[in-house]
Every structure is written in C-alpha cells, then in structure tokens.
Amino acid sequence: MKKSTKKPEMIEKSKFYALLMVTAVLAAVIVFLICYMFL
Image (cartoon, rainbow, N blue to C red; front, top):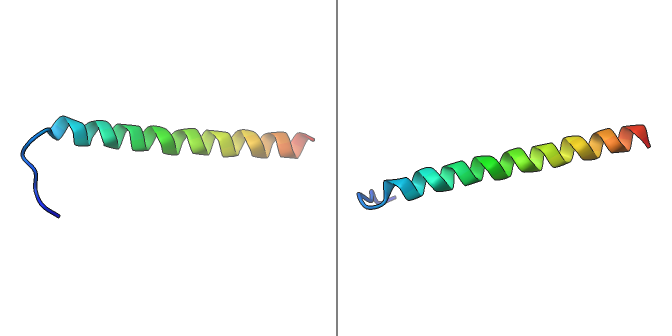
C-alpha cells in the first residue's frame, strides 16, 4: 500500500462514510429483528 501525502481528508471522509454505512446496516438489521420478533 503506497503512502499518499495528498488529500488526507479524503481518507478521513471515506472512513466516516464506511462507519456510517456499517451503523446504518446494523440499525436496519436490529429494526428487522425487532419487527420479526413482534410479528
């Protein structure tokens, strides 16, 4: 993996979006499980 000195903020942003995606998927799974339990 090459080290890139340009645009470090892009890496931070992609990390943030990856975390956001994981959180959204987890939230969707939890909501689905709750709905599944109550139906």
